Amino acid sequence: MRKLFLSSIAIIILAVPTLSSAAQAPTSAALWHDIQALEKSHAIMVDSQPYQLGSRTVDVYTTDLANAAENGAVRKAGSIEKVKRYPNGALVVKENYDAHKKLTGVTAMLKLDGYDKADRDWVMAAYKPGGQVVAYGKVQACIACHAMVTQQDFVFAPPPEQLLPVSIWKAFFPKQQMSTQYVKLLDQHPEAIVK
Picture 1 (cartoon, rainbow, N blue to C red):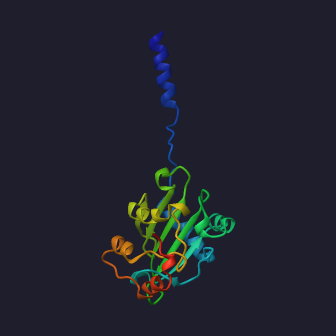
Picture 2 (tube, helix red, strand yellow):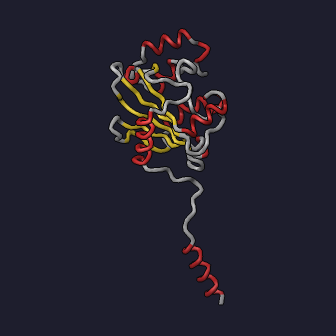
């Protein structure tokens, strides 16, 4: 009888699908599809503008895009700096452009409840202009920088509202040059430098 009971438990356990506490991220291709939809609809992020100043020579200009969930959270809070937690499904996209306004890359953050509790549940992604994946998932380099604004759920406000000091950029991008326009913003808006 004991053997039959243990066999029945084993069958029941094997029949129950494995449950995961972490949410499953979409594929990088599926996220790229969502990014393209934002690009096509010109879904500019609240408090942002097309071709605002970027920080490096590889992204002299940037355009921030966001879906309705992200923009709704910003409107409700009153500004990016006041958002404490974005809703599940919020998507933030940064298009990076060179000095000639040619697209050089696209980065994105997707809020996915249960994905990565330790790092505010963001799926991080970086793509080449054509959609080829550069980085995807729990990208520690992205997380380490965005953790500077944990109080606003890892989302930076666009320049000149928030600026990163030269020392931070050199730490994260040691082989890249800073944009001279961005350095001027640092001089003009020292109160906006993230500490």
